[in-house]
Image (cartoon, rainbow, N blue to C red; front, side):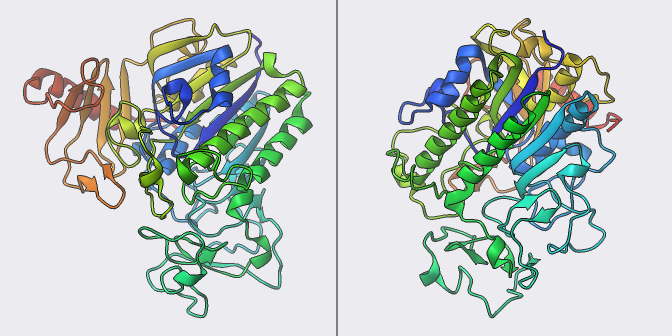
Length: 485
């Protein structure tokens, strides 16, 4: 295999195991994502390390489990960067091996070194540029959190120095002169179902409060095209040299406001429409690679950060219009959940002419990308969490992970060993009623045999105490290992 193929990771946001037609969806079509399977491997047992986005992205980029960092959780938009400058990362691996590295899209891993509050009107001292990316065009957190601005490198795009940005995350509105989603519902074009009632940007209530920066604010309907154009430009400018592109999509995360081209494109409402928009973006970036005759020398990975959710804070009728569609497919739970619906994700590894198309049930984790690509580049790295599964990704072996570790949104451990999956007990909320999600939190331990019970309905913890104790010991071993970053 070529020692330096280009690598593109296309990373969806809150896309479920059952949201793609190649994974069995019948009420929505995703032909462009499906087409990746023609030159690749579709994995049925691929996992994220977390059912929420920040920890999942941390693991993918660092090759470390979320438990290795005390502050890996869903971050506010003004948080410090979770990835320290001395941490070895996936983009650093590629950069060290002669690649030009780029990030386009959602970040949500924090900015700045945290020594003082972020001044959004000056260059930021700790951004993706400091963890291995040569260039980046991002929004800082998620689309439902302020600040709703683009960053190019270290600076806010289109910022007027006479209209400085202020951002605060607090319970009481620090800018009482400005309207909020809670007090000024008449100004909203998309209302909240729960939360999301602070600052109003583009007619949508957000999490957090923001003042100023009017010329820099983005519109939700423009996000897909803006990020796609940047990703295409990155390919255009780097077509003659090895490159790594992390194309972090914002769909189908809330708020779901597709461009005019895709509004009403499906019968599933706004959530279905933004999935169709996402699929179109995949087709466009693949066409760009084809335009430059790069497909034969480019690895394309498509995946998602965590499981799906219908109502995550906005009244977009996602539940009502969902019909018979099952975003998690046969899995239980969803985003925020410890069950497989929260952490088992779609994962396609496409490499035209180098991989024999097939479906693989090998168990893999997104944390393994760092060590797998290190093996591809003949580079030894100091990391014990990430495993070298390059032979599995290339279809040369069926031996995936023997033991797979993940972490719930409240830091509880999840461990899969062969067909058994174990979920630690805790006393957190068993159901997010407003979100319609079974969190998987129980005051007792849970043990399921996925071979016979993919929906994780029959708890076998009491009947299989030997296996339960074995998996508990595995968790103890993992959490107490000394890991070099």
